[in-house]
Amino acid sequence: MIWEKEMETAGRDELRTAQLLRLKQVVHTVYESVPYYKEQFDSHGIHPDALTSLDDLAKFPFTTKDALRDNYPFGLFAKPMKDIIRLHASSGTTGKPIVVGYTENDLQTWSGLIARIATMAGVTREDVAQICFSYGLFTGGFGLHYGLEKVGATVVPASVGNTEKQIMLIKDFNVTVLVCTPSYALYMAEVAGDMGVDPRTLPLKTGLFGAEPWTENMRVQIEERLNLVATDNYGLSEIMGPGVAGECRERAGLHINEDHFLVEVIDPNTGEVLPDGSEGELVFTTLTKEGFPVIRYRTKDISVINRERCACGRTTARMRKVSGRTDDMLIIRGVNVFPSQIESVLMEVAEVAPHYLIVVDKKKGYLDDLEVHVELNREKFTGSFRDLEDVEKKISRKLANVLTVSARVKLVEPKSLERTMGKAKRVIDRRNDA
Ligand code: DLL
Image (tube, rainbow, N blue to C red; front, side, top):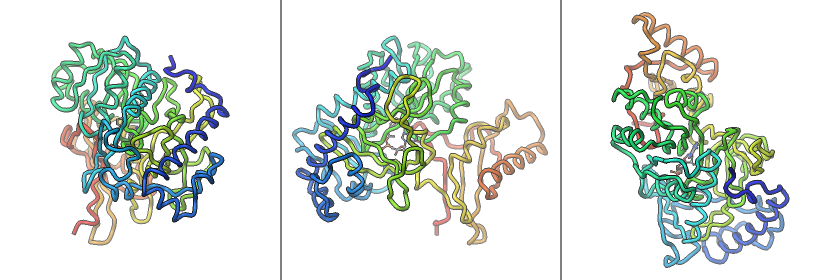
């Protein structure tokens, strides 16, 4: 089923016409109602009237996280506070968060877009959906909540924490859709096992996973352990929260809700707009947001755009699964290394479990040292101490092949690495510690 068939299957020309109309409006709105944008556009010598085609957007300046932070808390809102009926904030661990505001129309739009991505993933009103994202300033809990209600699914607002109880609810309420981060899904499978419940026997059918990067190999692990179809969905607070893009059952890229979010891919170093099919940084412009419209927001997320029609019938652009962030990239002895490359290798090794931590340090005070901690999988590893070394060496070799830089592998006890219920922390970089 397609939630908003007319929009999701519109011809490209029709879509572009609608986008242009909305884009013209939003650049005018921010110019007139948000002093920051007026100042930015003026200093770049560009006026909203200069936008006559979608390509003209490239002439407008980018908006960065710093700009949002500098205007904390409400400086970039385009509506007076009396029209803002909800606030959320991004999950920054340091400094001030980014605060986002929604008007009543924004919330309506948001739940409609979540309804789209949930429907794409195969959710219907017959489903019981357990939302294990935190309900609070984070956009995950409330965002998915209202959209799933709109679809007509029975929503279980379980939030995060008390994982044993979560498992009990899944069983007792006959929950068919699990909504959380992929890393929490894996943790749930583990906790179920500890409780003596075979996670494969849980009633779950579909996973709506998002809010953090995860590889295709991680997907295989989750599906195998939980016996469900795992789908990916993407979003960010600055643009809306979840609901920016999601996978259909083809799982051949995430459909971007392009009639609401205009996407560009840029070279992160030069800022140049790249053609479809090129890997680069995603940049989004909101087309319909009233409370907090954003022009050319640099996400730092790395992906590739494909605008071919999907086998599911939808015509919206698809983004490849996010492979990482420009600021996630580790430079190890001059070589660029992405955590997703490491994850991909680890997930293919039977003797280890899908829980890992990347530790980067400086050896002898100057030499970058990459160490990968990964948990042993007791079910698959039955060998002796000597064999452990062989497994470590095998993984090291595979990593060296993929990364072109050497990494030490340290097998650690099962369940010894920290588990998170939200976004997993995969990297500890100690190089700049005093
Ligand atoms: O994580 C919104 C969200 C909630 C999306 C629930 C999906 C489900 P933020 O906390 O602002 O918002 O974090 C946004 O998380 O820029 C990406 O780096 C990352 N991210 C989000 N979804 C995905 C995904 C929410 N599916 C930041 N794959 C984004 C990879 C993702 N990274």
